[in-house]
Length: 86
Image 1 (cartoon, rainbow, N blue to C red):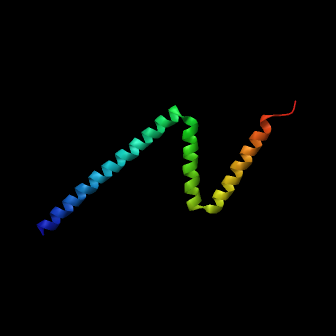
Image 2: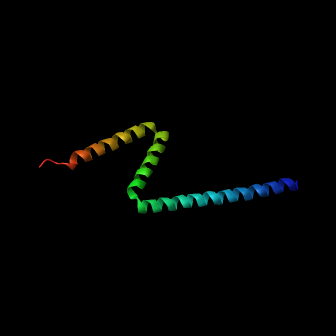
Image 3: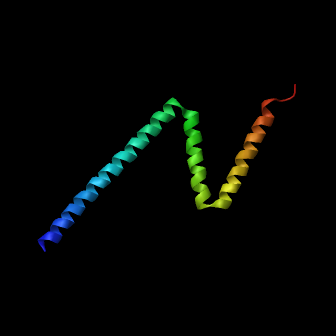
């Protein structure tokens, strides 16, 4: 009986340590993202957009196709308006 209780205590401590490590890793990743956004904002936004589009592809493929079409149309319209006729 005491052996099972000791095992339960050890597992609880191990899970608490694992939780602390995960929280530290998430905090470090958030800090790295903030520093990256300050030093390289354009590349960071492209990275975040790529991650979001990847997640959207897995979750909602039709929505992803529509999002890609909207982005392509927006880029094409911006390139068309860059050189207006004189």
